[in-house]
Amino acid sequence: MIPAWALLISFWLHMLATVAWLGGLAALALFVFPSMRRTLTDKQFATWANALNRRLDPIGWFSLGLLTFTGLLQMDGNPNYEGLFSISNSWAVAICLKHIVFLGMIAVSAILTWSVAPALGRAALQQARGKASGAAVEQTLRRFQSLIVLNLLLGLLVLAFTAMARIA
Image (cartoon, rainbow, N blue to C red; front, side, top):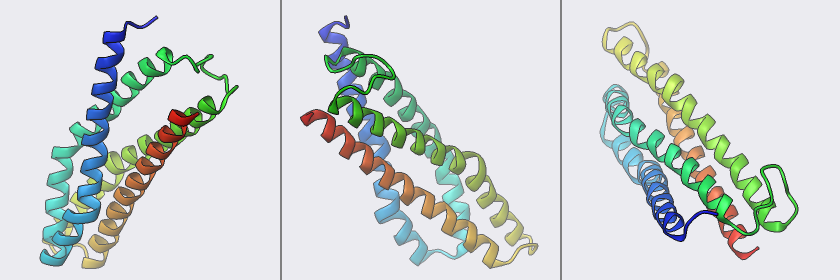
């Protein structure tokens, strides 16, 4: 049995990581990116987005790790939890759906970190050297922004399944 003080710390850290992760995604998707797209050229935006991504990636991955660890602690401490693959009640169904969507968020984050963000940096560099068209940068920027928005939507689904689990 997990001590109450450990669950308390786990809940607090879980909420902190959720706010950092989803708050960052929401700020980027809803405010920062649209505003920067209107004021910067594609090349400037690509360079800026690449630098921003390098700064935010460690926070995002740390948050995802913290969410995983604290979520497992909380799940184990919940009286509705009957085992890892047991889906015997509505709480377990909601938690299972939440974890499936969370794995989707991890996949999208991996694509952003190890595929799209490096491609964005390369495209901006090639355009600066005159070796790539603005269309290549624009296409990569659209993919980058689309994946950020997708991750935000997945995060909102995670919150919806969390709410479902709370009332189950």
